[in-house]
Image 1: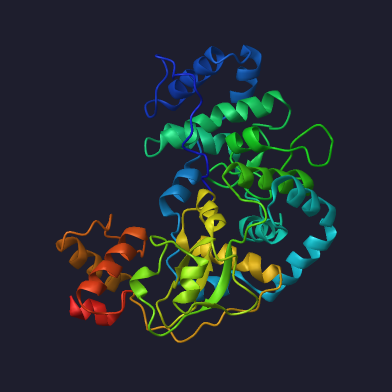
Image 2: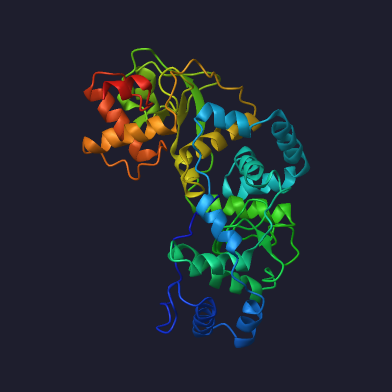
Length: 389
């Protein structure tokens, strides 16, 4: 699921003889081998790494059919957050308490945050994926859809192999090359891997201390701010300017309080803290205040619904109550959403691909056109908006 740092590439340029993608698979592998040697890897190491590598059609099928989180927040969060997952999370928090203490001390990342990722990515390590990782990375790099994303990961995997932390014949994970309990790409492991159990290796598949410490370090490297909140549920006044909701608008907590925003439980952050208000299903649904740390989540996964659900689940694991779902207005189905996107595009809005998905571009367009039509500008598309257009 996660592609944080995946667009970074090593500083060395590609070999002039190497194919960037496509063509004969064996020829492509030959180019990778030549480039690896040019980067300083020993020939024996390179040959051993690629000895068992094969093209995997199942990886390409998975890439083509990958699902986008199309369910609205309430539906999606209820699917992912079960009482069993909450109970297991609290058990894991107790079992690995000393590790979570180290993560909080060294990187400032709360245990609930990592527990939520651990739960959603692999169900606390139970389901880590059964795709051969080396095959997946080379297959996706050979495919010309996103070679710039996957090619650098191959050389990171060779580096891990040279350190005895990766087995090209046996290491398995997700179809897109993520490995271990918190699903990190090889380059992420190379840059942020931590030997949490002191055995001299970074093994995210079998060592919870390694996985949790590495996940904490990566979040810190992505900008996590120690000691600061990330999300909490709020109540909103009926006369709030709904156009001010969404990640596009940031105000201080004091400014939100002056507008009538209140914490549903506990207290809001200090008055000068920057914050945004999210109403994922419009003004009649749940409402959250999010702080700068919330934006770090998008470096882990770019789906708004996934990120919001993961952050909310982290608060649940740390004792927050179930959110107030409210009574949101009915949304649009896929066909209706596509019709809406076409109408918005005709009005000059950049909604990206007409795909029926409520992405960031569509949300922004909905919010703007709602205001122009004199409707509450809460970025939640409804049949009433579609009819008005």
